[in-house]
Length: 92
Image (tube, rainbow, N blue to C red; front, top):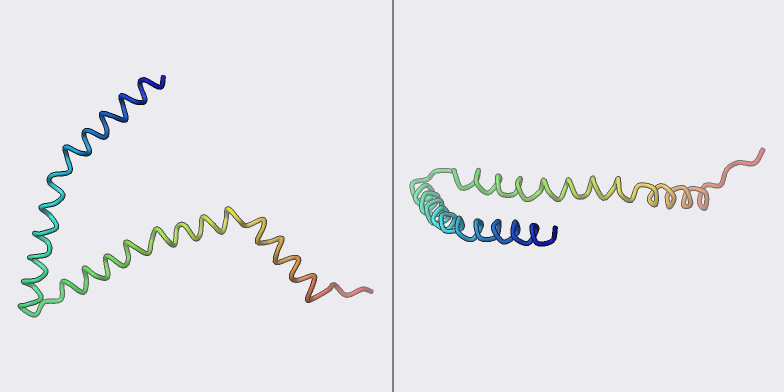
């Protein structure tokens, strides 16, 4: 079983390394396109920057929501303790 996992991982790693060559060309092409657009007075760069910020923010928001649900019990217990400490229940 371990032998099959090692072979699968090795093949996957080899495919990722072989396919990596095409990724470097795209960066230079996009940069050239954006620079020429900025020189001509375009606003594609602003949209690109907002897209990058959006793509960066979404995983953090998902992690915060997941962390809240993961730690919900301890958060609720702390809130209940704080509420009882500062706002004790009225005794009738």
